[in-house]
Image 1 (spheres, helix red, strand yellow):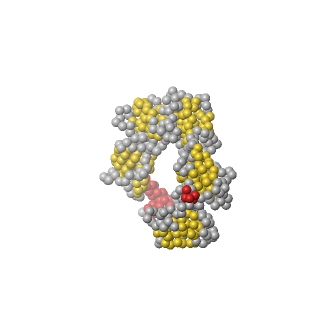
Image 2: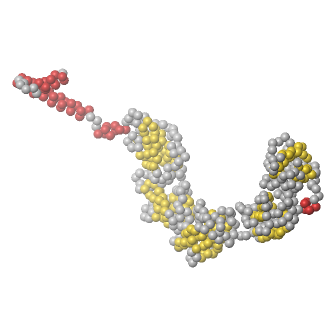
Image 3: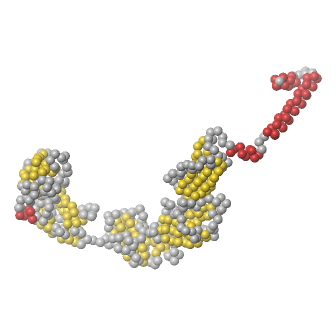
Length: 520
C-alpha cells in the first residue's frame, strides 16, 4: 500500500496530469495528515512520565560496572570499609585492606559488572565507632559521604610555633571519656609548620586539643572554639625565639645535638635529661655548620654534641642571647687517663712501628715508636687507654702482628716474641726462664728453611678448620706453645704450611704430651 502512495505522489509531479489525478492527490494528503495526527496522539499516550524518565537510569544496564566513591568527612580516619549489596547479610571483605582513609580523603571502589543498584556501606572509624549507610542507590549517585551531610565541616589550624616536632594530636569534645585516637597517624608536624586538622562534619564547635611533642611532653589547649577561632598555637607566648649557629670542628661526624634550658642537662654519657635530638636523622660532617632555632625560658642553654663514634661533649650554661656561634671542637670529649706500658722486643727482628689504641676505637691511632725498637731492647710508653687495648706491631718487611683486647692495667709489661699473639702470658716470663713446654701442652719449633704461614689444629678425621696463625707467621727457629682447645681433647691432627708451599702433617699428635715438636 505504501508503494501505491509513493506512486501517486510521483504521478502528481509529472507534467500534464488530469483533474482526476489532482483530486486523488488532495484526498491522499488528507489521509496522510490524519495518520500523522494519530501517530502523534499515540506517542503522547505511551510516552514515559517525567517520574518514569528519572527512574529509568536506576535500572541496571546490561554489562554496566558499578562503582562507589567514598568521601570521608567524619573527622576521623576510616580503618575498615565494607560494601555489600543491600540484599546480602554478609558485609564482605574489608575494601581498604592494609590502608586507611584519612579524614577529608576519597576512596574509589570498583564493584564489578551486572551488580544491583542498592548497597549497604559500613565504615569503622579510628575510635572504633561505626558509620553506616543502608540501601544506597549507586545507580542514581555513586558518591557516598561519611559524616553528617547537614552539618558544616569543622577544622582547626594547628600552628606548631614551638622548637620541637609534634608527634601526635588529639581532639575530643569536653567531658568525653577519652581523648580519642591520634589524629596525625603516621604524620609529624615539624617545628615552625602548621597543620590543618579536619574534625569532620559536625554541629559542635568546642574541643579539647592536646599535642604530644617529640620529647613526649604534652601541650593542652582545652575548650577551643574552632567556630570562632580555628587557629591553635602551641608555644608558650612568654618564650622568645633564639637562633644559634652550631659549627663542627671536632674532626668527627656530628650525629646528634641536644639543647635544653641551662642547668637542666643530664650526665654527659646518658640521654636522660637532655630532651630530644634536634638533628633527627641528619648528620653534620667535620667543618660544617648549621643554624639551630630554640624557644627556651631565658638565655642560658645546655648543649650536648654526640658523634658517630660514640663520643660526646657538652657545653653548659651558654648564653645564646649573647653567643650566637657555638663550636664543638672535641676538646670537651672526656679523655682516658694516660697509662704506662713497657714494650720489650724479644722477636727475631727490629720492631719498626707499634700502635696501641683503645679496643673501642675504630682505628689504630698514632704510631708510638718514631725511632723503632731494636731486638732485646725495651721502651716505656704512655698511652691514653682505659685498660683494654689493641696492639699492632710492624716489622721492616711490612709484616705485622696483632693482638686484641689486652688488659694493660693487669699486663703493663708486654714482651713481643714469637707466638705472643696467642701466648697465655705476655710478660715474657716463659721466654726468659725457658722452662720448656708447660705441662699439658706441646711446643712447636720451626726448624725449616722458611717461615710457617698457616697452622691448623683439628680433631683426627675432621675437616680442616680455621688457621690458628691468622695474620701472624712462625719464623725460622721460633717456637709456639699450644694447649688443647678444650680440656682433655689431647688427640689432634696438626698441619703446617710453609711460605715456600711445603705442607707438613703430624697425625696423631698428643697436645697434652708436654714435649717439643720440630717442624718439618
